Length: 79
Image 1: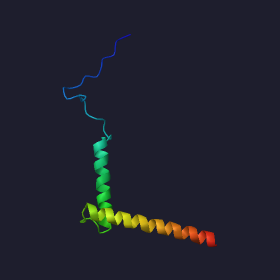
Image 2 (image 1 turned 60 degrees about the vertical axis):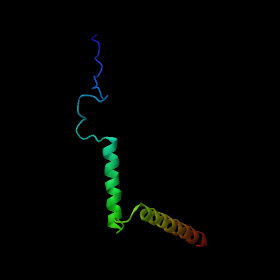
Image 3 (image 1 turned 180 degrees about the horizontal axis):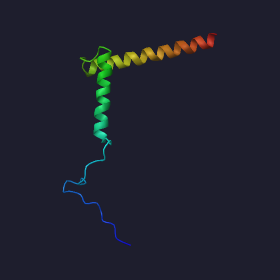
Image 4 (image 1 turned 60 degrees about the horizontal axis):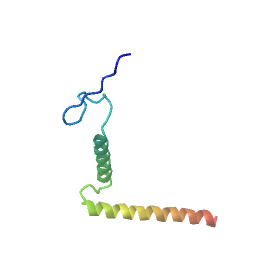
């Protein structure tokens, strides 16, 4: 049996070959998710808000959602 060669790496620790076509690195996936979140905020008209404004709007939305769930549960129990 022949011995297998180890994959050689460059001095910076990365393999010499390119990634397979169609594969995304973790950084590319994170960047894509950030673009999608930004597009969703733009669609809601909140694209130009700062980080604090976006955080406040997410908290208000979560409270609204929780109240809606609680109201549905109350309606189910009363019926």
